[in-house]
Structure formats: C-alpha cells, structure tokens
Length: 190
View 1 (cartoon, rainbow, N blue to C red):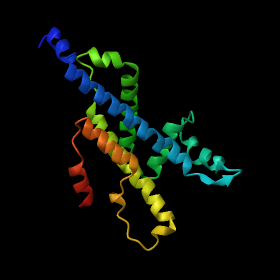
View 2: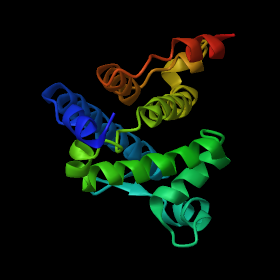
View 3: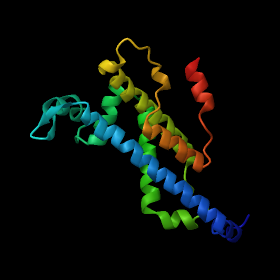
View 4: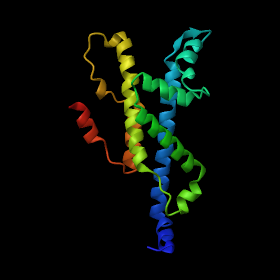
C-alpha cells in the first residue's frame, strides 16, 4: 500500500472515529491510574481531621515515599513505594512509564495521531493499564478489608476485589476493542 492509500485509509471517517475512541480511552485510563498512585499513596498516611480538614503524617510520607525518588517526584516515588509494598511489580512500573509517555504523545500530538498512518494508539498498553488498575484495586481494597471492623471474621477473596476505577477501565477497554481479561482472571483463580 502506497502512502496516498495509507493516508486515505487513515482519514476515512470510521478510521478517525476509531482513533478518537482509542485516544479518549487511553487518556481516560491514565487519568484513572494517576490518582490511584499519587492520591491513594498519600492517603495511606492520613491521620484524621483537624478543624474540618484532612490531616496527613507528612513527615512519615516524606520519609517512606518521597525519599524513594531523588527529585521527590510524587508519581515516581509513589510507584517505588507500591513496588516495596508488593502492590506492583517493577515490570508494571516500567509499563506505567511507557503508558505515561504514550499518554503525553497522544495528548500533545493528537493531530499527528489523526493523520500519520504510522502513529496509532497502543492498545496493548491500554490492556496493561487495565491490569495495573486491577492490581491497585486489589491492594487498596485488601487494606480496607483488613482494617475495617465491618469485615472482621469474614473470608475475603482479595483477588476478586473489583474497584470502581477497575470497572471503568474494563468498560473503556471494551469500548476500545481491547480483549477482556478472562484468561488472566482464570489464571489468577487457579
């Protein structure tokens, strides 16, 4: 296929619509991941209310999290903390770096995405994002179950925890045509 044919195919209305759907799903995925990493890790150091405001143990947060990254980048330091807590693997953090880079490409080069036949949304990374959000939901959900007296004495299927962000991620992935994770769910159950 020559360049003119590739460009014509890329600019076909159904192709543009698919590209925009993939881009929107990918951008949304990143926005679902980011707070689970930055805000939830910071929230782990919550220590109560004072004068109607949330209070955090900032000294512990600084020592336990921010010290893990030389520039004290909250996102990267929080990723390191999540690896230390065994919520994520180093491979998943490397994938998160790819997701972040690709998110920036999509957000800042949307016109290129629409017209460059060789530039596509990486739906493989979208599938990886679904798994990361699942793992984070299991991690944060297990902490909630283990510390909430409402769950005392109950048997909890931690791998069966499905957070709100995970359910939304699954939905976004299905809209983008990313295959479901039935095989991965089956493998985790075994």
